[in-house]
Image (cartoon, rainbow over all chains, first blue to last red; front, side, top):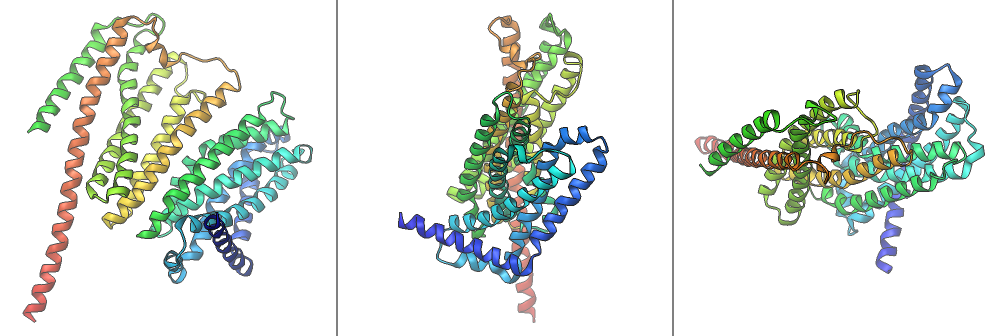
Length: 229
Length: 237
């Protein structure tokens, strides 16, 4: 038990380090947030100005914006580590690789959560969707989606961070894997917004939980091999 | 030599099964001649999944035993798997066009899952090309192959739910070929085609594996030659 607790505190320390660097530099959060906002605006231009059509498409647009912004967010978080060989140093510390993965993933989760809440609000305003009416299920969906994007994203950012074609390979590898998450989150969001008329919200949230658990386990189990080479 | 015999057997088997599927087996009552596409289509879809299973297992083998030959197996299976995946999707679209009336059916979990499969493993192959160091490449490829294999069942399951929870009509499921009510001649032809394709698959995998081994040997020889010439230059000085 103490071993696990130690790992958890180490993971939190790594996440805190990232948060601190982020607060002082503010490169990732601000640019990622603006990217998501621009994506939403472009969706509006692509599908508007019919308000009803935009409202119908809103759940899909919300999650596409979050998934795309997620690619940027996890990439920025890993780029922090490439300066001055920081990742190699991190790997040299006497801590488990799982803790490093967990720390980076927690950092990614916090960024995605902030992003999710802000983008959810923006979608409510821009696409005339009543977000407040179903706030609790929507927030649960955002939390579960943020966990999944962070878990998958941290893993693939670790794979690609030292590649030549990083900016192409990260979305190429990460986005197909996120397909079930996109599907489940969009379905849960539409169900929540419609007041869950068919009682299917729970099933989609379960799918998201299953995806999150499997991907966190897979990421934690394999991420360590990346630090060896 | 043994591989060559396997290749000839596979070629003969595939040719014979193609002729049987095209001319010997009667056409399906509902779907007509279009149903004949199912024989190679189902066979290649099965091999696509088998390939990516092999890629993931070979990845685990590499991480466990650190024998670079596992990586050659993973590469061979992934490359051949991508070919069969593309062929399966193409066959599915050719079949969907007359039977469904559309080439693409979003609610069909097999079709959508297979399309994502193609994306996942093209990404896998691209990733391999971007890493030069053989061991680093093997490790990166292994874990990406494992995570992709973990993702596939979730994709299939979620698309199945996508359809199921909506209660839309199930259109001409390809599984009907294996329906117990289907005449034995259809089932027999399908099994024969799967067998013939699997032989061809095995031949291609072995050849690709041999090629991958030769690649590694050539790289190694080039590296040694560079070291030797550098040494000779030093001695001459």
